[in-house]
Each structure stands twice: as C-alpha cells, then as structure tokens.
Length: 301
Image (tube, rainbow, N blue to C red):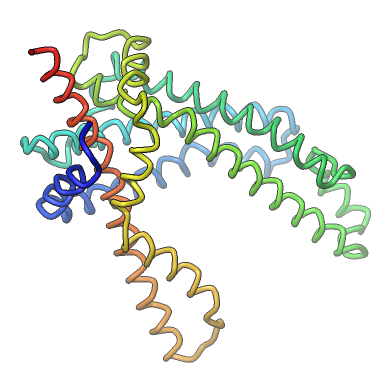
C-alpha cells in the first residue's frame, strides 16, 4: 500500500498547479451554498415569525433542511468531479461544479441516498444528545417556550435570568448535538467518501454497488485517510486555528490600530483556512486514484 509520504508528494504537485483555480471554485461554491440555503430556509423563518404552530414549523424545517442538504451535496458532487479531473491532469473549468444539476439521474439518486443517510445520522444524534443532556441537566424541557405568552405576561422583563439560562442550555444542547453528529458522521460517512468518484468512473453502476465499492476501497484505509488529511492541512490548518482563537482575545474597540490588526488577522486566517480546506479536499481524489491504480495493477497481473 502506498505510504502517506508518496501521497503528499502527489498532492503537493496538484496543489501547486491548481491552487488558485480551486480556491476560486471553493469560494464560489461557498457563496452559492449560502445564498441557496437562505432562499430555501427563509419560508420556514417566515412561518415561525408569523406564529405558525410548532408542529407545522418542525415539519417544514425538516423538509426544507433536507432540500438544502441535497443542494449542498449537488454542489459537492460537482466539486468532487472537478478535483478528480484535476488529479488526472485533465481539462476542467468552473462549469463542473454544476454538473450534478445537469445530470440528476443517477447523480440525483446518489445525492438523495446521501441526504437520507445524513438525515438518519442527524436523528440518531438528536436522540443521543437528548440522552446525554438529560444526564447533565435533568430539569431541562425539550420544547420551545411560548415566547408570545411570556411577553404578554411580562415575564421576560421580570425574569431575564430565566431567558439567559434557557439560551445557555440551548447553546450547550446544540454544541453537544453537533459534536455527536460530527463524530458519528466521521465514523460512517468516511467509508463512503469515494462514491462520487466511483459514480463518475462507473455511471451505470447501481447505487448500492457504489456504496459497497467505496466501503471496500476504504477497508483498512480509514485512519490513513484521516492522517493524510491532517498532514495535508498541515501548517495552514494550524495557523488558521491559532488565528481563530487569537482574534477572540482582541478587545472590541474603535481604535483604528486594533481594527486594522483585526482585519489583517482575518485576511491571514481566510487565506490559510481556504488553503488548508483545498488540500484536505484533494486528499480524497489523490487517495482514490492510488487505490484504484493499485487494484488495476493487481488485476492485470
């Protein structure tokens, strides 16, 4: 099996050749995902603001959240194809990030399968988080308070500490949920990390076979991919994390010197974080190509 040193050599070659183009594509995808997510989820916000029943808001939130995730996955599919072609030194352009919207069958089925899998993981994470949180705070009520009734009764003004405590509890609940979802997603989804690449190479392969093939290719390679990704992020990832922590210790001030310093730190953070993300993204097609080429070499012998 190819070692990480060899994989890093190949990744560095691709990164040096395509870094600017990939950074522009990733930045464009981030903007498009933000705009489409806001457009998709804004009806839910309006429902909540207009006083719709909690049950209706909850159902609408789940449906629109699934749609938003599907759109995000569609962009990720196109980005994955673009990176794969760059890894192979083939012609690419920014139009590849929209390829999932043009070829929804069977790409749409793959995206739907991933969306369903993420929804299941989110549901499991919610129940796990609820169990954990009940152990931490048994008195917490898992339902949204009727803010309008509290306002009518004047309870918010009289008891601001109640709202503050509720907000802290909700933030803690969300933090635990995201941590559980991340760990669970990392453990499960990493085994299907090659599905997009496999579909591009085998468009007629069925959805179950694509997922099974990716699982087989990741056999004994899960920790290698994680180490490869951390190594690829390298100093750029470390610098970005350090600056993200550092900027929180700079006091808010109208002082122009501090404002300029904060702006410079933000710019350095942005460049290093995007560079680290690009290199981490590239680990998937680079490792996919190596595993695929090794299997092809073995089968030809």
